[in-house]
Length: 557
Image 1 (tube, rainbow, N blue to C red):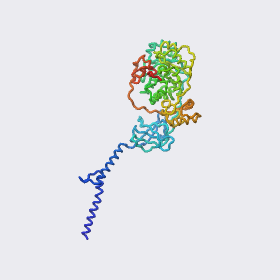
Image 2 (cartoon, rainbow, N blue to C red):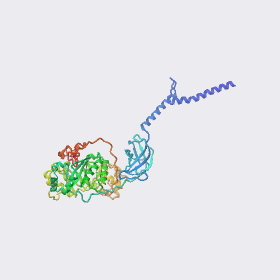
Image 3 (cartoon, rainbow, N blue to C red):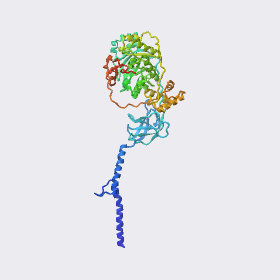
Image 4 (cartoon, helix red, strand yellow):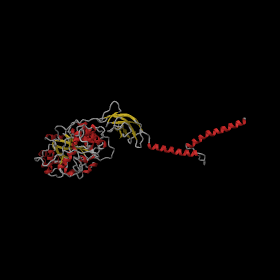
């Protein structure tokens, strides 16, 4: 009995040892341990497959990255936007500073779309960007209070964070209407180089101006961030003593808007009666730069100092020119479009029709800048004056002194009779589905005041169309979804919402501008106007052509 029991105990012990050892062997194989040489087992084979799958999962996890984490989102005061004591309350167009881990500027912040009850159903996204106060996102139009989340380009999402309370964009009231009287009233002449305008003989300049009925001289004061030595307090005082108003004009590029604003403020400090911003090709698409310039300029010169914008006359030909910023609330009170009809390749009548139709939506007095260069005929100069009178312009001016012929000077102050066959346009820009550009932005800013879900992207999309129809219906206007005269009239009674534009992405240098320029007086026809983009034309600003007031470069429309 004992022997058998001892044998049984030994057998049982061996069996238990085998049972205990088996899982260890399987575990070793599954974890990638080696089997005895030449004896692969089913367990070992299965372990290799499992190892490959695990490696595959690790690879996919590395490719997708770590999910971002939001730990806080705080309102940041910016421009006209305000923050409350509760930092999770933010205005549309305001900034949220996002705190957390594992995210970058490649990621987007997703907000709950207005009218949608679930955060992740058709959300509206906006990119993160670095700023001195942290990683921020501008709260886009069309969103509502709710929870937000981050998502990487690879699709990794953070957990929902919030809720964040979103309130309406700040309402901006334009408190700088055009003054009752200013140097923009009456006839003016533009001077590019004093040295090429009657040889810088001020007595001769005064006599010639008065003989032609000119009351205001527009004299170039700076190019980019280079202040011109020809514009001085002594110059202004001399011309004032002889009964002439003096406006400074500066050509701006947008590479350093704060520096350009400082140049404008310097001309104002030198005694200029008004300032004209000459913003053209270089400012296209640079809404952030335009807003920076306007904010800095107004901070330096005050809200009521008379400022004008001169640029291309046909707004719809230059969709990304920030007219709505330069001529918007707090901006220039006067619109001085370059109506160079011969440069455009049309007639004074046709140029007026297009210019006034495209520009009237901005609500600023239009002070047309006519063409006296390129040997335009005296009869066309007379016609331009007749059209200004018929359209009720408070003033007009001419580009430019050094290229005006004797016949042109004679036509400037010849007795003026009413023009025959003038038809003053009453048309407005007809914007509809598929339209784009600055006119759409301007319309959307006004529409958003009544229909807050309206985007301000410059793209006339389905939401814009639906909101415009709703606005039209509420005002007894046929719901066409197109901006006719009645629609514009109703929209422009509203105060446009504020849009805060993000800085543009970095780009290469556009070159420096010289102090005297290389094109000289030959730059009147606009044929060399394209050189201005690299800054090589110096004083002409970008122009060669009508380089003046603009680098219209022969395509001033």
